[in-house]
Image 1 (cartoon, rainbow, N blue to C red):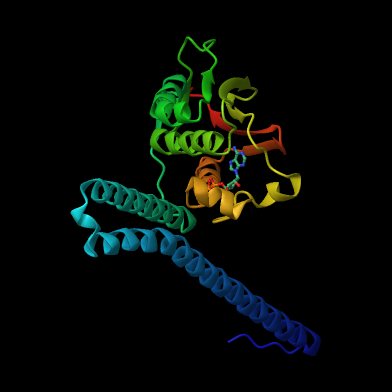
Image 2 (cartoon, rainbow, N blue to C red; image 1 turned 30 degrees about the horizontal axis):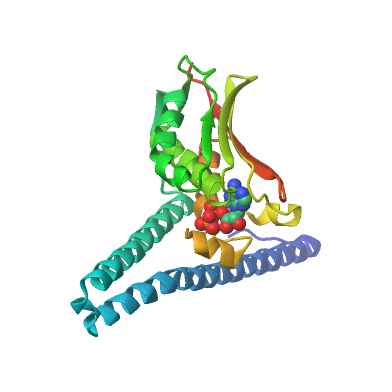
Amino acid sequence: KRVTTDMATLTQEIDKYARDKKLEIETLKVREEYRKEFLGNVSHELKTPLFTVQGYILTLLDGAIEDESIRDKYLDRASKGVERLIYIVKDLDMITKLEVGDLRLDIETFDIVELIASVFEMFEMKSAKKKITLTFDRVYKNPILVSADKERIQQVLSNLIVNSIKYGREKGTTEVSIENLVKNKVIIRVTDNGEGIIKANIPRLFERFYRVDKSGSRKEGGSGLGLAIVKHIVEAHDENIFIDSEYGVGSEFSFTLEKAK
Ligand code: ADP
């Protein structure tokens, strides 16, 4: 054991120990609050679709099953509700992995032009429903090779494009573009001319479960986790994400990636 003879040093050490302990307790308290809030949000998110599905099933059991057209309609709605639950659980799983740092990136070299084109194809139907035009500048005839986790970047692109459609206006546009930056980087932009975001709300967008318009977003579905996942994935790559949005005009979400050497 170390012996401290100097009284002043001893007092200092005791003070420091007390400060550290206090800090530790504060941190634990914050974590506990965070955990409680998270659980509260999760059960809230799951409740709505669960009750909806239960409602349809009970009505069917109550006799609605006899009527063929009602039966099909209710089964279809119950199935959509379950689908939504699956999406939420998948998002929760992803965010948990990302937050405990459990997600290993599988870095490979791939063509980002091709990936964007394939994500566009996935959302053709969804955008057509709202008559939204998806444009990806055909200037990019040649491959642009980047070094990143392809599956995760596909998720980033999907989440941003889904949002641009969800919060986009009827007959609007979603545009994706790529630009070279210095230092071997590219920046990918997803731009819409949709409802936009009030400046004061922008800093909170990447928080888990945060939604600007609770009722409006609910109509559109989603877990409120999309942008939190996007931010985590981009940051896990040591890259940056930016938002530029004007209320009533539109939004632009952009992120950087490293070009393959
Ligand atoms: P959600 O499941 O609600 O879409 P996200 O995390 O993806 O969750 O987005 C959080 C919130 O940010 C949305 O509820 C919406 O209010 C706002 N938002 C996201 N993308 C856009 C966009 N392109 N235009 C306008 N608002 C957006």
